[in-house]
Image 1 (cartoon, rainbow, N blue to C red):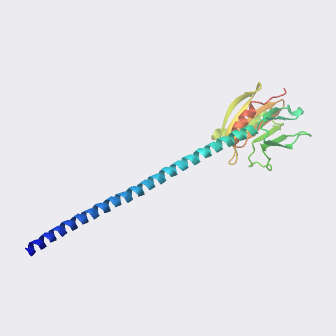
Image 2: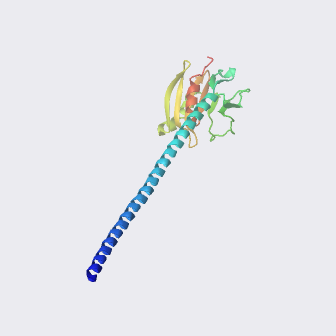
Length: 219
């Protein structure tokens, strides 16, 4: 009788232990799944938050860039009037008021007239320095000036096209003038002289194109 009772108790204990172990395993699995789910949730939340932060930062930068561009455009208004020397055809045009002007050669005693325009300040004059606008009026035949660009046009560095402003026909040249200068130029014949206006960087192309449209000549 005692043997049967002992056998029953042993069976009961074994069943209880199996149940307990099973329950522990289930709890461990559930706990593991809960931890995994929590970690996965945090990772996804972090990724989403990072993407949101990046998107917000990008949007803010784009808005700031847009506002800065609009501000810079507004700062250029109203335009100022540039007027060249009377004896050299009195060419005139409008340019942004944020640009400064430096007349390097005033042609008071003849020769070449040179003026340089650039935002804020005009840097030291050199052939490699980029300027928003270079203006030259020289006592040189128009055809010879245009011919001087032929080697670079044939090479493909420059592209030549015709242009007419204020009833005056001329030549427009775009491309690489040198390894330091990439921009656009327009060349016109003024009486017995030749006028060249050039921008040295595509950064100023929009301003250059707008400026060209306002050119006026005294014929």
